[in-house]
Length: 372
Image (cartoon, rainbow, N blue to C red):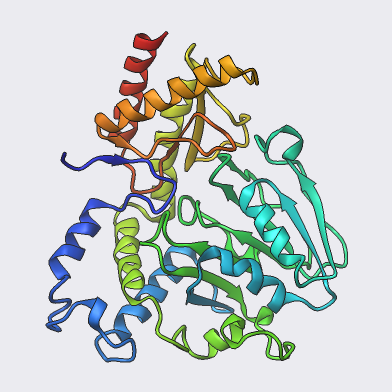
C-alpha cells in the first residue's frame, strides 16, 4: 500500500514535504554530518535549531515579548499538574468541563487546590456543545478551558471574558489551526502530536508575571515553569528531534499562509464534510452547529439510534466495524470513533489535504449505498 490518508486523532498526519526533508536530513542535517537525533542539545549545531523554532512560534502566533515560549516534556497531561502547582495562590480555580481532557485536568487540579469550581459543563447532553458562559468572575487564581475537544469534536467559538483572572487553555488539538489572540490568555499549552510535530514535545506559552519563584518547596524542580524559563527549555535534555520537526512544520504553515491560511484551508475541509453529513440520510454529525470543531469530526450512521437493547447495539457495532475495515482497505485509516461517542471520527488537522476529505466523502457515499 502506498501513502494513506491518515485521520488519526493523534499522533496525526504530517505534511509530506516535511517528512521528505526529515528523510533527506536524517543522516546529515545542515551539513553537520550527523542527525538531529544524535546532536548534543548544548552544541553549536543544535542551538540555532531550537532558537529558530521559538522565533517561528512567536512570529506565527504573534506572541508578545512579555510571554515565554517553552518546549517541555510529559505531554499536555503533565500540564494538568504543573498549572495548579505553579499558579496556586489562594487555592481556588475555575474550570469549564467540556469533555474527557477537561475532566482529567479537573481531577488533577483537585489534588493540589482546596477549591476547584466547575463553573459550566456540557455533560448534560453528552458534551455535544460548548456551554454559554461569556463572563467568568470570582476570586480565582485562574480559569481553565479546553479550546478544542478532540474526542467529542467541539470547539469554543468565543473566548470567555475573565477580567483580571488569568485564562488558561489547552489548545493541543487546535494550535495554529486558525488565528488566536495570545494576549487574551495567561497560559496556553499544546501537546505537539496533532498539529505541530511528532509526539514528545509540549509547547507552553506563558505570561511572564505567572512564572513564580516563590513556590512551595514540595513542587518538583522539573514541574516549575521558572526552572525551564531560566534555562531556555534546556534544564535537561529537551526532545530535540520533535522540536526540529516542529520547526519544519512551522515553515510549512508559513509557506501556506500562516494561521490565516490554515483557517481558510481548514474551513474548506470542514464545511465540505459537515455539509455532506447534514444532507445525508445515512450519516449524521454528533455536535451542535455553532460548537463544531474544524479539527475533529465525529459522526454516526443511521444504525446508531441510541437504543440499548442487545440487537440494536450488535447491529451498530457490526456496521461501524465494517465501515472502519473497508475504509482502511481503501487507504483511509484511523477512522474508528472513541468509545464514548461511538461511530467514526475524522480528524482533519492542518496537514490533512482537501483531497483526503474528498476521498473520505466518496467512500462514505459508496458505503451508504451498499449498506442502506
